[in-house]
Length: 240
View 1 (cartoon, rainbow, N blue to C red):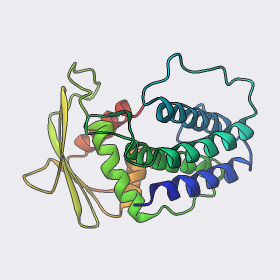
View 2: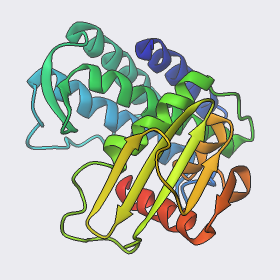
View 3: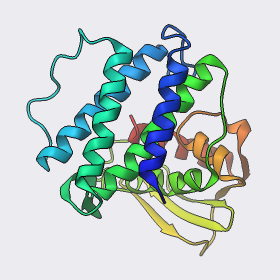
View 4: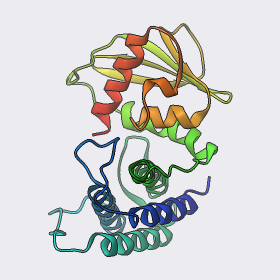
């Protein structure tokens, strides 16, 4: 998948819509305006530029960005991120939060989805939502399931949703089977075994629901609705 092209395209659209007004409230991020979203993305970009440069987490972090003009900073950070990704390629060893991938390819994918989700935020704020590439949405389901929620983050049982159940997600011929309990979330490809609940249908609404950008009424489910809601709560904990 051409993640760098998605970073460019989604980033350009985010900046375009942000220029419709920075003061608009963002429905999916209560208490945030478009300005908050754009500054958040700019900081994420600036951080990843340093990660790719150093191969490690920058310390100290962050610098004082408070005096920077929001849109100018965003444009400069976006250009710097694209340049840093291009310079790194996809095989450079670097810090990531994935136990399975310590190469710069991880950041190509992660930044494509970071940008897409926040593009949706600013579009929802201005009521001008445009389509998502179905292949990118399908990939995004996989990405949020691992490493965002399926990584080794739960060993201490630090969750308000200590469910003990199996849930399945199915979209356009791909399935993921997820077993969650208080201390682990195990994600496996395929549809083996029984599940207490299943989410199914087109990848875009599933992707947006997983990221909390649409409500439960946007997705199709069967089985125990409490398992579905608890799983969404678990994702919310992992993606804060």
